[in-house]
Each structure stands twice: as structure tokens, then as C-alpha cells.
Image (tube, rainbow, N blue to C red):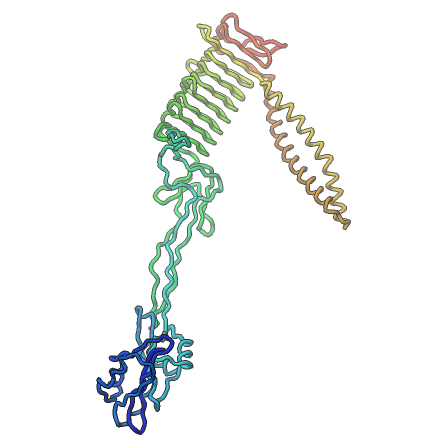
Length: 529
């Protein structure tokens, strides 16, 4: 407790009693505060007589101020408002020995007179009433600080800082072909999430004035086509597979990636969706797309792979290293010194010194319409104007089903039969166990484990069976096309050209015109158009 003072009134007059500090409290009374107190209650004093108040006392001291008895002085307190009207502190002075003490209601009423009405700490007041501590800082009111909120923010689940930058390889070299300029996304992928602003909560000072939290930033999700906004408007999802980007704080998803050229400015392209190249694909670069690839210029010694079709408006000069692979069809003005493989058909204005394989047909019907040099194959038809060359360039064309397809057909047929056998044996066992369980007969843990394992086997085999049957159906259609496999030459086939149909072949000895080649009685036979 701090050192403090009290007025003592008795028959001999008015005295000032000084009490020493205890338990480490403030050891001296504030002399100016004491004189102000005496003056306020009109108690005469001599400043020199108050000297003991300015010393560290070891015990109580009484100082006679006047021989006249003063009026009783009630317990009093001074209010100090601090911290921007957020805290009120009281300094209590004891009543004279014949004065009255404050009650809790007296203190609260005095605070109200001072307009201090919010955050009154009644517990602190009760504690003081029960255990007075004079000339100490007693916190009697505390305001409520406003709870400041946070700005809205958006979390993006893709790289929003796409810049063409080369890839640093493990050996320290730089790969200028892979520049990381594409953000792939799949259908249904979460692209962005909005965390709304938290506006915070109002506060109040001890006078009851409202204290507003600081302003926060509001935001919304902005987006373009091919994007779905969740019902609560807090999340964005891709509606198609493709390329996601952020442009002027707006999210876009495109299933067509459009570039001018594929060169050092773009690096290799790998994209989930369609790719449109308005210019050229330069040598040594790669383009891979899950959809179609359209090149409106020329393809050099590059590699293009498409889950759909490949279209090359001005043709391809592969320089001996160019590669085209399409799950669909390939259409090009010309194919030269390249390798091309399509699960569908291949159509070109001309094919020269290239390896071209088509899942169905090859059509070469351009203005020149020739196949010269290399190897060209198709399942059912090769249709060409001019086949081979006058100079005797080695040219091989082949139609019919490859041994690989036939082998695969046999494997699938055997697999389907084996899967059906396993399922036919397992299903009755599973049904019997189910009937036993439904009849209320107990099953051991081992039996339950065996049943679960058997159910898993049946499920797996049914899935494998469905996939095998679907592939087998496709191969059946291909095998049916073998019967009509043919090579059609609309103008000239030159000598030296080799024609293969299924497992038989024929080398053309003399040039011929307007002919069609089929397999007949174990040989390649030329028939009329």
C-alpha cells in the first residue's frame, strides 16, 4: 500500500496523520497533492510543517495543523481519464476520523456525473470498498477497443504470375524450350476462393461513444466464360479442361490456347484442350494437346501430338526429325521428310520420303497428289493420284490389319472368356453367403473376410470385362474392314513401288494407270477402277 494521509479531528484541534508505505508501495506522499487537498477543504497549514510528508516514514506521524477542530471530511476521490478516454483511474483519500465513507453507489453516481457510463468495473469497486487502498491507481472503468477486421482476399489455385522464363535443369543448364507459360486445369477444378472481408466490431469509450473499426476492402470474384460460381459466391470452378489465366483481376478458362508461333518466345506447348497456332512451329519444338492442334502456317522439324486432330494449313517439312501423332485425324497440305501416325485418317496434298500410318484411310488427292518415297500404311484404303516416282524412289504402301492388331484381338478374346468364367464361379458363392446372412445364420470372421475379398474380385473383374469388351468391339470393326482393304491409284503407279495387302505383297514391274489393288486368293491383284 502507498503512503497516505488522513485528517484527524479531536478536542485539541485538527491534525494530519501520515501513514508509511507497506509491502513495497510508494514511500512518499505527493506534497503538492497534499497541499491542494488541504486547501480544497479550507484547512489551514504551514508548508514547513508538512516536511515529514516529503520523507520516507518508518511509522505513522501526526502533525498538528490548527488548534481549531475542522468540519468532518468525507472520503474523497479524484478521477483521471487516460488512454484516449479508454480508461478511468480513481485515487481515493480516506475520510477524516469523523467523516463518512463512500459507498459503491456513491462512486458509480460520481462517475455518472462525469459522464463515465461504460465499462464500469464493479468488481474493482467492490474490492476497494472491502479493502481500501488509498492514493493508488484504482481502475474503475475500461472502454471496449473496436475489433478491427480484415480486408477481403482471394486465393488463386493456379500460377497468376506467368512469364516466359526458361527452366533451370538439375545440371545447372537452362532449358529454353520449356518456358512454363501454361496453367492447365481440369473440368471441375477449383480455381479461386474468396475470403470475404471481416468488418470487425464497434467499440466504446468510457463515455459510451461508439468507436468504429478501421475500414476494410470489399472484393468479389470476377471471371469470364467456362467458369462456374458456387452458390455462396465464394468459389470458382472450371467448367472445361483448358488453360486458366488471370487478366486484370478476372479469371479466364479457355479450351483453346492461341499463339502466334511456337518458337523461343513460347517454348514447348503442353496444353489440356485445343491449340491454335496462327503462324509456324519451328524446328526442335514440341506441341502436345489433349484436343485438336491447328497450325495455320508451316511445321518444321518439330513434334506435334494431339488427343484429337492435327491440321497443318501449309504443310510440314520435318527435316528428317519431325513427328506428328494424332488420336484423331491428320490433315496437311504436304508431309515431307517426317513421321506421321493417326488413329483416324490421314489426308494430304502430297507425301514425300515420310513414314505415314493411319488407323483407317490415307487420301492424297491434292493438285499434285503423289506418294513418293518412304512408307505409307492404312487399315482399309490408300487413295492416291500418283504412287511412286519415275526415278524409282523406294516407295512402300500397305493396307490391311497389322499382326499386332490381330494378336491383341486374340488376347482380348481369351481375357473375356477367362473373366466370365471367374465371375460365373464367384457369384453363386457370394449369393449363398448373402442368403445365409439374411436367414440369421452367423458367419465367422474368416468367412466375412473371404466374402469381402470375393466381392472385390467380382467388382474388379466386371470392370476389366467391360473395358475388354469395348476394345474388342472396336477391333472387330477394324477386322471387318480388312476384307475391303485396297489401294486406289487415280492416275499412275510407277514401277518399283511395293504394295502390301495384309500378309501378301507385290512389286510393280511396269508403270500402270487408273488401277485398284486388292487381295484376291492369297495374292495382290490389280483390278479396274
